[in-house]
Length: 178
Image 1 (tube, rainbow, N blue to C red):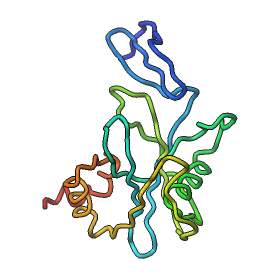
Image 2 (image 1 turned 135 degrees about the vertical axis):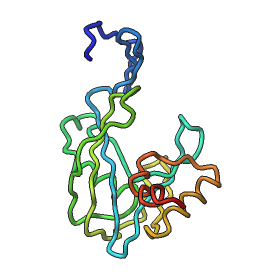
Image 3 (image 1 turned 180 degrees about the horizontal axis):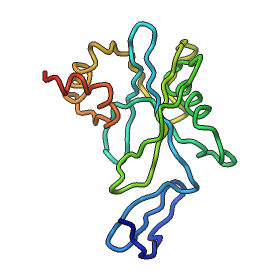
């Protein structure tokens, strides 16, 4: 059901815009910025995860590596796969021989219009320390997929927020029971 009510901008920042349309309040990414989220599993069946402080949660969060596409000035039109490769190396210190798109997804469609391109990184090679760009202070975790449920529970017990996108890796464990 489409609404033909006019959209109003309530507030606009460098990266997000708050909007209303009728009774709906929601947020969009400014300037057409999107995100790339990377599923990086090495040849030994370890998944790369990152831990970083997230201001909206006011705590550390355990996540898949990810980053914005075209967020730098002049970066409009950046290719999602190029951005994913760049972000993977910046955040984790790993380079992928090949990046494959798994499709476009929406984070929380009831309140944000943001989409992200989910990619799979193949042929990982450690080329640097990772940790992100200046000020990101990212901690990299290389976790055996078989131990991922326990690792996530330990992170939760330490008070970390758990990004919803980890559900795709945890689904078999959650659906089969503990």
